[in-house]
Amino acid sequence: MKKKVLLMGKSGSGKTSMRSIIFANYIARDTRRLGATIDVEHSHVRFLGNLVLNLWDCGGQEAFMENYFTSQKDNIFRNVEVLIYVFDVESRELDKDMHYYQSCLEAILQRSPYAKIFCLIHKMDLVQEDQRELIFKEREEDLKRLSKPLDCTCFRTSIWDETLYQAWSSIVYLLIPNVEQLKTNLINFADIIDADEVLLFERATFLVISHCQRREHRDVHRFEKISNIIKQFKLSCSKLAASFQSMEVRNSSFAAFIDVFTQNTYVMVIMSDLSIPPATTLINIKNARKHFEKLERVNEHPMVR
Image: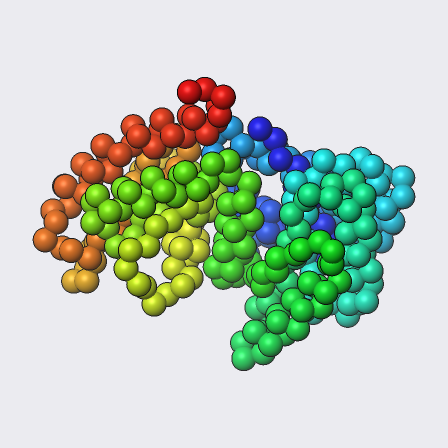
């Protein structure tokens, strides 16, 4: 199952850096050596086994942008499932940025009217912390107004914190088939084992693809922070020719278990009832694997019953 994803925005806005961090295992500081994208760079990213993201990273230099809306219009904007448009929050040519964005929307309306639209207000780390929410809200209002009659969802992002994982997890979540069925089964699993929280991570990217929360937690960004930490830990393991399989973290308040789950996922289970032995939770995770693997196969081959 292929899904065409357009990644667009002016040259230097940060498109290739974010793509490299999410899908090519770069760390933020290493993206400085990436060059500008020439014309369109295609990549096929296998995600959750059968879902393939056909990612079109479109160079943002003016000559390329003009070509996208003239000679390449049909090729670029036909059969698009998702448009991700990246804005540099510190751009000094905001009017030109908005012009190109509107040209994208017009082409999408003509060629792919049912595409989902996402705008990333990027490099937010360059904005003073006490100004970030205000600036983001102003840009979001402008973009939602400009996008009509299409709907757009906006995220503020930076390669230096958890916001990048939050945005891409939300985008990819909408592309996963039968995702509500997956969440229902995750809720049942959490209830059975009396977990505070259960999360599913995609195995290659460590993006959060589903979660169930049964008890409140004060840190709303914890999923993305965990994604970032574990992905860096996995990279460190690979440099030492070791493979990351599982991890257990325990203190006086909770126990957290991260383990290989299905062929395409990791699971994280949070338990605050410390009277439940760790071995019991690990056995429950092991026993749930077969059920979720079966569910995954059905999602990969939806015509099979």
